[in-house]
Image: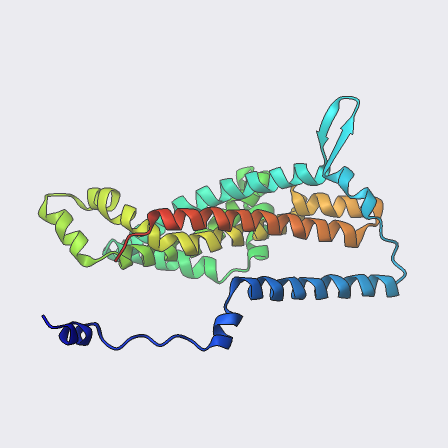
Length: 280
C-alpha cells in the first residue's frame, strides 16, 4: 500500500492545542493555582480571626496528635479518632458494597419481582436524607432490634451508600461487551459462573474511579454520626474544642486530616487503575 493511502486511512493529524492552553493544563500551573486558592482561604480565615481578637494556640495542637510521656510514645485524641473513623468507614463500605452488589444483580436479573424490589429499595433510600436515615436507625429501629449507636451508624452509612454503589455496579456490568456474555454461554457457563469468572473481573476497571469517589464520599459522610455521639474524628474534635476553645486550630487540623486520608486513597486507587487498565 502506498504511503499516501496509509496516511489517508489514518485520517488527518490531530491538531495540538494552543500554547496558552497547554500551559494552563500543565501540572505546575495546576499546583500553583491550587496553592493560591488554599493560601487565600487560609489568609482569609487568619484575617477574620485576627479581627475577632482570636488567640491562636497552634503550639497546643501536636499534643492531640501524639505525645511522649514517661510510658513512651502515645497517640493523641485526634489520631485515635482518625483510627475510629477509618474503622467505621471500612466496615460500612464493605457492607455497602455487598448490599449494592445484591441490589444491582436483582435489578439486572430480568425477574419482575427482583427488579421491582431493587427499584423500590433504590427509590426509598435515595429520597431519604442521610441525617433522617440515621435518626430512623438509631431512635426507631435501635430500640426495637437492640442496636447500639455504633451498629446503627454502620447500618445507616452502609444502606445509604449501597443505593449509590448499586448503580456503579450496574453501570460497570453493562459496560462489559455483550460478546463476553455470549462467549461465556458458548462454553457452558451458568449465569453465576459468567458473573464470577468473566463479567465482574472485567467490570472492575470501569468501576474503580466511581467507587473511589464513593469511598471518599462515605469517609466524609461518616462525620454525621457525631450527632449521636459516636466516638470518631469529628466527635472527638468537638469534645476537644469544648475543653480548650481552640475552634480554628482543631477544625483546620481535622479538615487537613480528612484531606490527607482521601488524597492517599485517591493516589492508591490511581495505581490500581493503571494496573487494571487494558489496551482497547
